[in-house]
Each structure stands twice: as C-alpha cells, then as structure tokens.
Length: 116
Image (cartoon, helix red, strand yellow):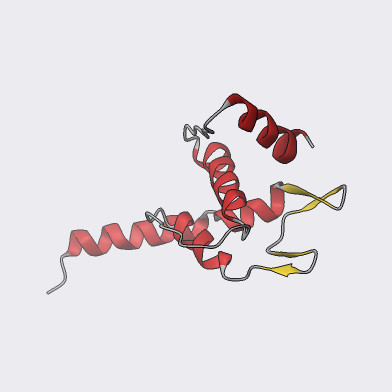
C-alpha cells in the first residue's frame, strides 16, 4: 500500500522541478565562454569538442542529487562547478563558496574564467 503523504510529497517535488529551470538550461541562457579570443554562449559542443555525456551530470545536479564525477582531465568539470554555483546563486538564492588552494591560482582562475 502506498503512503499517501509520501506520494503527495513526491508529486509536489516533481511539479516544482518541472517548473524550474535546470542548471544546463540556465548556463545556456546566461553563461558566456571565452573561445578563440571571443566570448560565446555556453554549449556542450564547441570548437571541435563534444561533451554530450555532461548533460546527465547537469541533470543530476539540477535534481539536487549528490554527484560524484569520475573523469579524465579537460572534459568540462570546472564549467559544471561554475555553472552550478552561479545557478544556485541566481535561481535558488543559495550561498556559494568557490575555493582555490592559493592566491596565485585564484588570480589565474579569475582572469581566465571571469575577467577575460
């Protein structure tokens, strides 16, 4: 027998998720990526690289699931982290802290990813 309160809670959560923009949609609408010296809209496929497998990771993050990513280098995990942080700041009014090990790395990161 199905617990009525659990069913109601599950349905409410599903409706709320369906009405909200997910992390990937938000990134496509709001993020710009520097590519080839120019700023371009965020996409999972660009400049000869395609990362369609990242869409599943974005979905899991949007659903609020704890997500572990096993990956090689340079496949978009930093952009996932940035997009998720900015999404939760903008849409969910969450506090976000993005930490780097040293001030020099913070400057490089900021220059390459934010300042341009």
